[in-house]
Amino acid sequence: MDICEKISYIKGLAEGLALDDKSKEGKVLLAIIDLLGDITDEICEIEDGCDELLDQIDAVDEDLAALEEIIYEDDDCDCDCDCDCDCDCDCDCDDEVYEIECPVCNNIIYLDADMLEEVGMVCPNCGTDLEFDFDCDDDDCCCGCGEEEEEE
Image 1 (cartoon, rainbow, N blue to C red):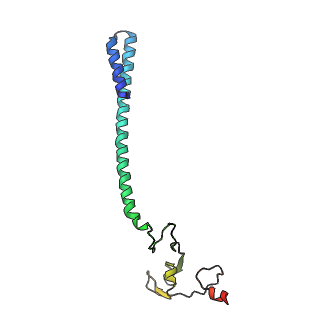
Image 2 (image 1 turned 60 degrees about the vertical axis):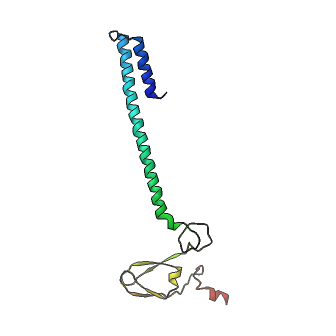
Image 3 (image 1 turned 45 degrees about the horizontal axis):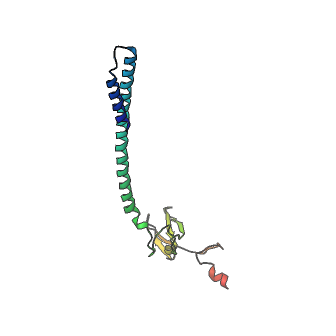
């Protein structure tokens, strides 16, 4: 039995006892039973509200899952790889990103290794022609600039 059924059972027992509402004991018992009935009604309303909220949360969760599927479907790496993914594939998805500052507008431009192979580009902010000079002094650099010197 749930709490609503239990209070109904207790009310039925009290009616069967034919409690005298004129006596002190009868008044107290009837008041306690009425109070239990009110408490039970409140609890049942709260349970119904919780059930409704759980249904709404489930609906929102399903909607969110659908949105995540739409938004993140391109991030799933099937390893034809031109992606920035966190998968365990053998692709070079974790290429380093370089920052170049335009000398005219001071706009920061982010380039990956493929873009660095180009000799120049146009600043997307101000349209200034930019040329790159890759004389790298870093011995730990992985750009390939020091490989020819080391082989000699």
